[in-house]
Image 1 (tube, rainbow, N blue to C red):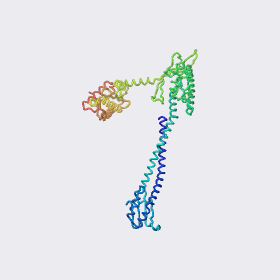
Image 2 (cartoon, one colour):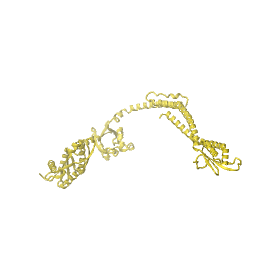
Image 3 (cartoon, helix red, strand yellow):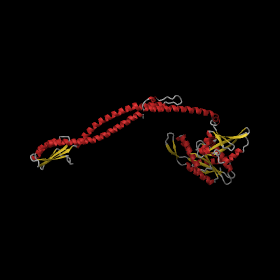
Image 4 (cartoon, rainbow, N blue to C red):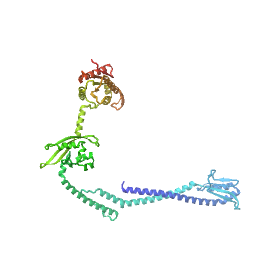
Length: 524
């Protein structure tokens, strides 16, 4: 919020608060004055009717007494009046208050003042008195509030014209200051009041700032010209560059090199220890230095690849290629130029490419080609007594789910089944998607009983319910089964093609026999 409206709101709030406080104080004071005035009025009324009340009490004339009492009760200040003698009691209301009377007057005989003939009780109308006080306070508060608001508005207007508006204009001019081009001085600098003094100070600061900026710009251009060649070699390079002496102690380096080493060692270590920068990349610092120093082929660079486990890096291990070039000037050794190339992304792309080439896109299990290659390697490497089992798995009921719920639900089911199969075997075993809803396992170092146990474990995990969504988004539990065939190698049989064919036959035998079972191949 701008200064003007904010100042007006503050003044109005203070004015209203002041009016409320003054009204509260006035209410208490007026209430006391109204009460005193009411007492005086009641005393005057009593004095007016005293003679009639004395006569009515003396002769015990109830009619006259009632006229006196009702006359008093007609006044708004009196809520009730009562005239009492030894033989009669007359009141203006049958329900006069039980509390203490406001006025009790002892009535004497009209002819003998020393003779008491009765008493006159008068009860004050407190509600009427309070209402009178509130009415007076209300009108007084209205007048007070109006005066305060008028004064507040006047103060706000004067403040706006003399202070807020000039300050706002000054801030607008400051926002438009452009140090790159012409600096326009503030118009308020010509005023004779306090704002004029502030404007003059600001104008002086603007002029000095412009001078300082011009000086810095000239100095920056000179510095840029002096360091132009160095920047071309170092700062503009995409590689990490450094120049070392014959002991591989740093002489200079480009910003990319410095940031790389500082991230590993810390800024203070880098600044104080120019000889230990290699420790940011390898624990075999001395061996690497010896390798570089012993390389006598000055015409060809000496390259070394190093893998680094950086604790502060989210990506973990990074890979760098170091290239050392020995530089001679006029036949004498001068320095070693160090190129460091980050190979991490290339390595990651290679790993990713290898993974994608060997894994199924949907289930992330090995694909068919990779499974065949790894299974054949497992069979060729196994020793006597350490048989390898080939397991074929074909899902039962998958097609019905895929047709009824849609291909997305079918894909989700295959992912779940693949994960359950992978969780059911060891890390040393091979789990692959063979194609469609068929899977293959290659189990190392198992006998027939162990292979059947693994098959039953896989079947038990597959038949568990799977929560799937159809094309409309509705969820439902679905069930699939599996026909599992197993073939196991022995000393006379270690050919993958034969074993896979036998496992496939056992699997089809299960399908013909009722599905949802595990069968070991025993021969045709």
